[in-house]
Image (cartoon, rainbow, N blue to C red; front, side, top):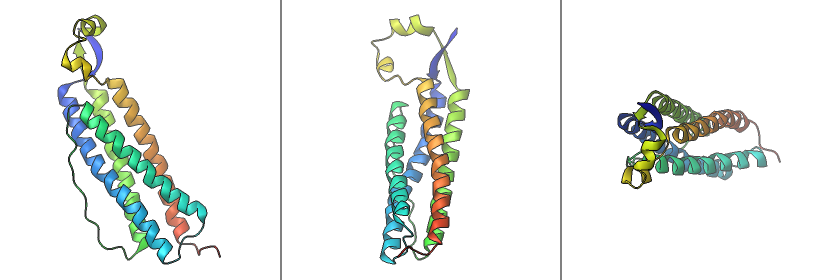
Length: 180
């Protein structure tokens, strides 16, 4: 049989499970970036305007990631699982930023694992002509290609690498005195 651009059913389940973990991490990032920024503004510890923009960027991109992850989980036949990690009351801003950095690293690791699963679980099938014959069935209408999944995971991985660098810069910037 020829290889087709599909992921095995077991691969889809494994990726959806990993992405559910990523969804929960991204949701925590979405909640905490504005919270930390608000705390910094309230204690007048925002070093400069770029710092604020970087925080907003991280929050917005985490929101975008969460949407992509939910969509991909659904396309793979999974169901997004709701869960929120409860965080303590924020006292130490540096500690909260370090926690955000660890969450960004966790998201990166999850996306890398999911990509590896997608790469290692290519389905065998009838090829293009076999897909044409079954084009009207339910599976074909819900089809998400293996290459599409890998491309989305590549994008998420690259974004997370950028988020890690940005979070590291924010940690350093938060230690500086605000501009007057």
